[in-house]
Length: 201
Ligand SMILES: C[S@@+](CC[C@H](N)C(=O)[O-])C[C@H]1O[C@@H](n2cnc3c(N)ncnc32)[C@H](O)[C@@H]1O
Image (cartoon, rainbow, N blue to C red; front, side, top):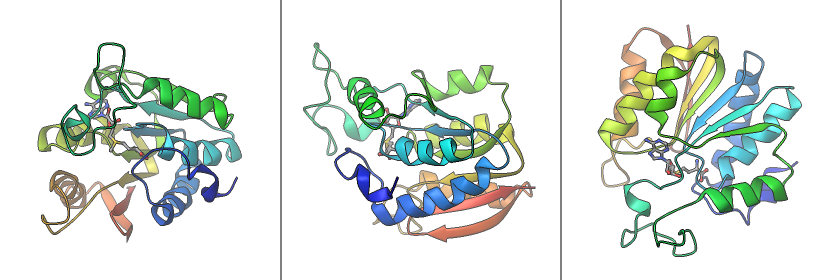
């Protein structure tokens, strides 16, 4: 399925980045299952689902679906269509609708929970880890620290929304990218727009 076919799915992954994500995920999927933190309405998930199906593996999609800071009512990225019957942010119905519409329910395993809670109990080694969850420093650090140790050797870590210039975006994804590079545990694979990929040594 071509990347263009998900253009009607709400999300935060431009087409060119989606294509690069698919390329890196294809490499990771040779190593083990895929896991993403931050699914929102399923745009990145659907791209990863295509890759997973091709590689005969699965995508674990971790998101509490209550939105990040910027999605809350009154915030810049709030979408009135994504609220529950009490007016709180909720992307889960739209996420599930999109998985069904694009027949991805067979390869996507949604984990509707705080990423740190899932990480604490996680035991499955991964071939590909996509970090696109909360963008506060605490959230990004917790995701990096909680999840990067689950990557198998040669598995890929991809971080989204990495901007060196604070005027272009928050600095937390950039901070964890720096941490990963300095850890001695990864080698750089590449950069594309706001995506950064590293390989677990
Ligand atoms: C930037 S959006 C993800 C965008 C998505 N990858 C796409 O392609 O459109 C971030 C998502 O992370 C989720 N999130 C934020 N902090 C989280 C946490 N601590 N645990 C689980 N999900 C979290 C939010 O609910 C939100 O849906």
